[in-house]
Image (cartoon, rainbow, N blue to C red; front, side, top):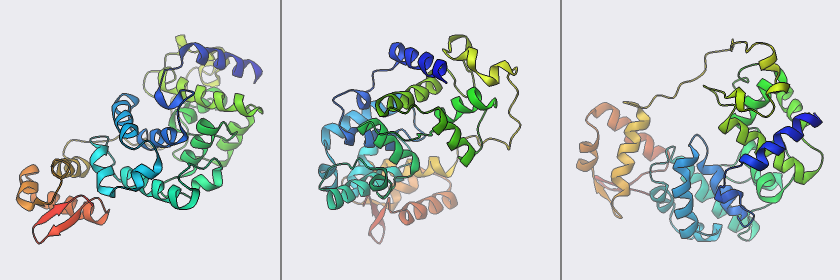
Length: 288
């Protein structure tokens, strides 16, 4: 374990990306915003939106003071726009429960709207240097390959997986926090899902999956995200129309945005049900 940790931490010292939410001056709010935005979204797409978001809403109270629809509008094309509503709800809860300061304790964080185990642990670790197991997709893949000898982890986090992650986590809080982000970075840049660069991996010599001859994944079929023609794409088109205007939009403009009527009606209804869209009148719609 010592060799594994030292090798990876040295690599991270040399190869860590300069990301705004990792800088010493980054606020806990910046970290929280980044974690919401980075869910299922690449860093390159998040960077400009994160910058704009922090410039407009430098703290939770600034966001909470505006309607939730403004969060959806500013979310732009990051995808999965319900995250914007959840982030707005979390900001409101932070103001109401914690005086506008992002809490440091895991239990307080996970009690916020839209915050699950991963996000609560990530904010506690990356914003406050606490010692928690942080298990995102990249971390789980690196640990599965390195320590368990399998190409990919199970579809959901298991108790055994969490125990293995805790066993390898350094005892010192500061080192544990750096370790957590280092493993994440290795998964993002080197130990990727499709084309791992084992020749550039600092812990390749210690990797169980590599020493076993790279056995292929033999679990349940892994989900592949489709886009063209899906309800996700339709919902995105409809929201794009609504983001263009400050006020209500007539139904005819939404009809023009997506030709398939049954799918358009279904997706518009789902947006209303999710709270992302509200009725502005008999034939108009708007952001909340």
